[in-house]
Amino acid sequence: MSEIVNLNRVRKARARTERERQAADNRARFGRSKAEKDAVQKRENRDAARHEGHRLSDREEKDQ
Image 1: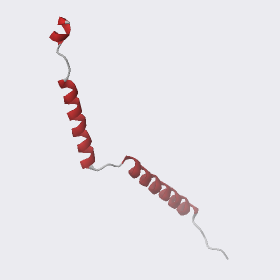
Image 2: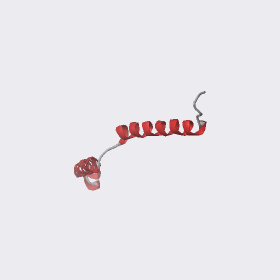
Image 3: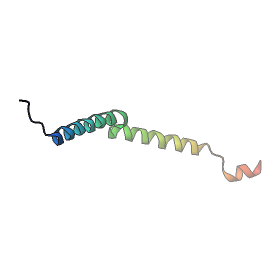
């Protein structure tokens, strides 16, 4: 005789392994450490400040 298989358990186990695989893919694609996120944020803030520093004031624009 063959072994009795609970189909609900098999289906749930298959779904669980698929969710785990998807989670691993997402961690690889989107996961960044807090230090990496902070470094990117600091660089963006520094670049924005540098960009603003080169902006002409309203008065200089009207004179020309």
